Image 1 (cartoon, rainbow, N blue to C red):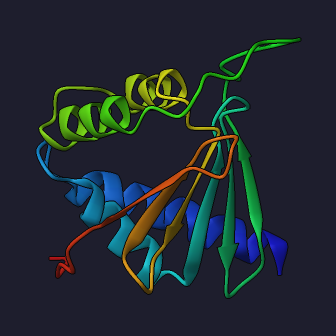
Image 2: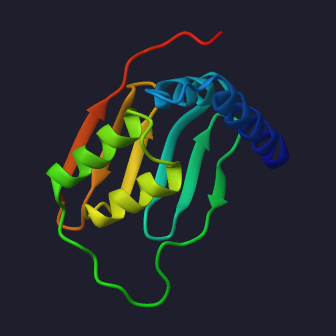
Image 3: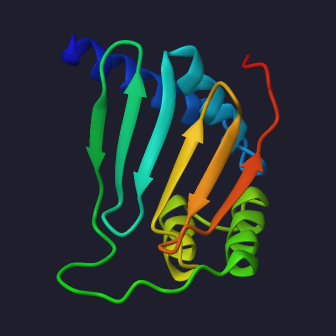
Length: 139
């Protein structure tokens, strides 16, 4: 089951990357994940680690951590988060730059709900910002 979940996730990520336009591309990636059975993507921002909850088994993907050892968590700054989001949506940042922007805006985790088409960004004090993304059809 686990190897099936991993292979399905890899294929969905590859498909999402292939069909994703540079501007406004996230909904294409999210739809590719949803079609592959991913229900939620949970990102631990300082660890740069994803937990993909899928119909075929859950999968962890560990990226390069943003911090090691001890580091202060910044206060949640919704305006800075929205600025990072808009820059990414406009194709002005890479994914690692977007994650760094989230961290600098005080986001410690975010959760993508592929059924509700939302992404919720969380700070340390219970602050949160929810952004909806549009439904799209993949080619």
